[in-house]
Image (spheres, protein in one colour):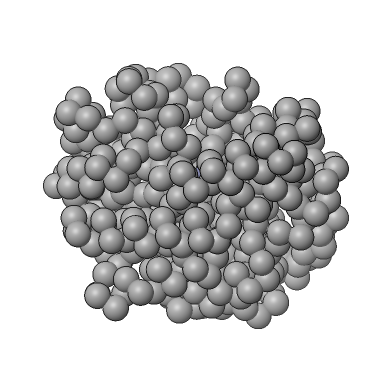
Length: 460
Ligand SMILES: [Zn+2]
């Protein structure tokens, strides 16, 4: 099968020009002006943007949590992602403390294989680093194509590793050619403040926010950067929210260190005033919490300064009924919010359309950098001859409203209900196949492939 996209404005992290794209099989075969090929299918993209399929490196699909599961499966979550122009996601496998990485991977494979609609990969979350796990790091990298290892500096007793394990893990991951990523918040301080607020009867969602002050994230980000610098291990801080944490990374650049930083779309455009709504604040309970306006300003500037390389989502949806598990106690609210479908359109509208970032920067942080940092480039994350034909045809002028009534995520509310945004995904290709056409998904359950990733060097 062949496909010709005519006259689109092709935008990558570095380029911006009008041309045709010739797709044969699963890859881009030629790019040029007035290509003379005859195709089975011709799409006229005159007046439209064509950019690479989005890569969201931070999603939680079908994740076991507090006796329930995040409400998007690999099927519904990757389908919603495609609707929003994201063609590849990286989900998290969680090791159970006292068990192996392999057991955890088998469990996640049993849920994702044959069900995902869009392409996906896994990070391996190491929650118990010991001599047995050490041997599994190389196996994950060499045999499974899983080259990034997630760590938690919070959630003691379930997910957290201490600094002793962190340094040892970093040394092993560096040796094997991988990357350590981190949830960088000071778990002990958060546990103390959470317990204190509960004991004082302060139980509304606002106290979720007040139990995780900026200091807890700034301190842990600096500590993580120090350990990454000492071990020489490539490091990546997930879901950064605030000025203090970004300044810790800025300080690390003074000793010539590079620490990768991811923020998420919600931290750029939502703020903590939403927690003052006691009845509905649970919709935005996530960790770290939403911050202040000054932090949004810092994060947008950080993107333009090259300190923040990635905008992800930390998509982890729970239906309202699940959120109500914490209606009388903020500490029992399942953490996370739905955004996998909204990331690109929100970032375009609030970032590019409003003049905060350039179109090239938009592609860089939403598509190209995540593919590069995590070892999928140039197969994913750009438009080039030989790359996967993962393409988004985007109408930059259409205005529309986000709503739970029209979204495709398996969750009964929208964190952005009623937002009017400019710019809409029109057509999406994944590996040469039209998977979204004007709001209709044409790909079957199981079309999504597991993407084995390459070793990484910590440079992009
Ligand atoms: Zn997460």
